[in-house]
Length: 131
Image 1 (cartoon, rainbow, N blue to C red):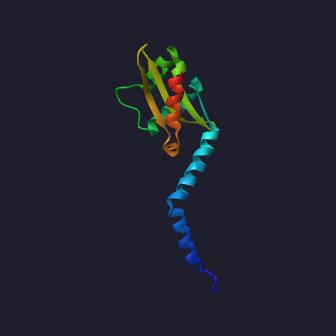
Image 2: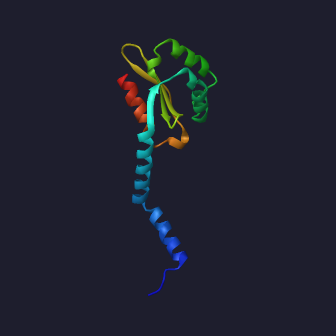
Image 3: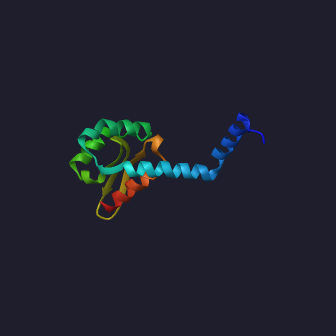
């Protein structure tokens, strides 16, 4: 009986990692870990700078919208519809909601690029819908 050569093991290990089932399991484990430590809560004044930085990373800012003014307006009117997703003390997602009595709207929906694909935007929208 021969001992497998290191290069053979290395190739086999790469094939295992390339397997879509293995990737799905790794993704599920990662998702589960993040979702267990995520908190969705109402925006607080101390989130101000972190939220604007997140919006910049998510490419949500436009020259015709002043994010500081948008936040100030929301703070003065129905702040309960301005939600953040927080993981381990870091704001990783936001949504700002509006309701005119007939229709609901969602603005500034964004998730930090490193946390995308884990259901955070969906969780934010579900919570907004219940608010």
